[in-house]
Length: 216
Image (cartoon, rainbow, N blue to C red; front, top):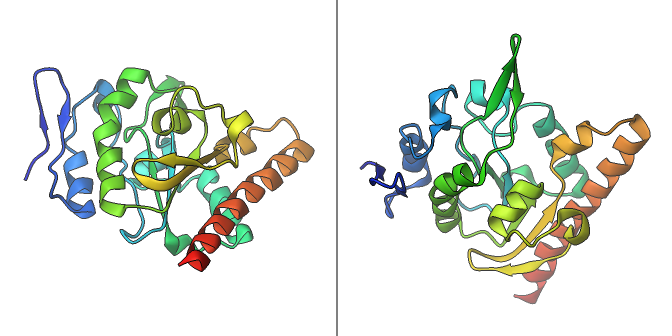
């Protein structure tokens, strides 16, 4: 089983592949140029039975080296917020819109660089394949890049965060800030306020799931 590119560099992902097979196939992806400099493709991680799929922008430096999503500082903050919000981490599948790390080198450091629309489009079949296999109840977009890719370019995270919308690949979709944005807050007071707002959004996700469970 293999993923194929056509002459337009569009990716064809096998419809019958499992998440494990997709993860392996993604390592061969050359649908855009990001594979050339990245260490590896960083596929999503979590159970196929997850009720929540969280979608970020792209792997960072630590994720690129480890081959796992959200293992750096942003991932640590996310895990803490999930626990505080009462969401079981084993009920969450975490992935990114783009599977390769895009960066620019500054000395010995690799600095995150925002992916282009063409790179997001090239990677879309992988995300759609993940969502198709998992069939989550809720998709949570972390940050504006994920929200624009999953919900649409009209979506504004700071205006629409915490609200739920219909989505063809889940019962509902919502957005909140990316954990890395919290870490970039200019001072400790702002960071704490941003973190509390983030936890509040995640509590809303938990409450949405609880209400759905009670309705059945």
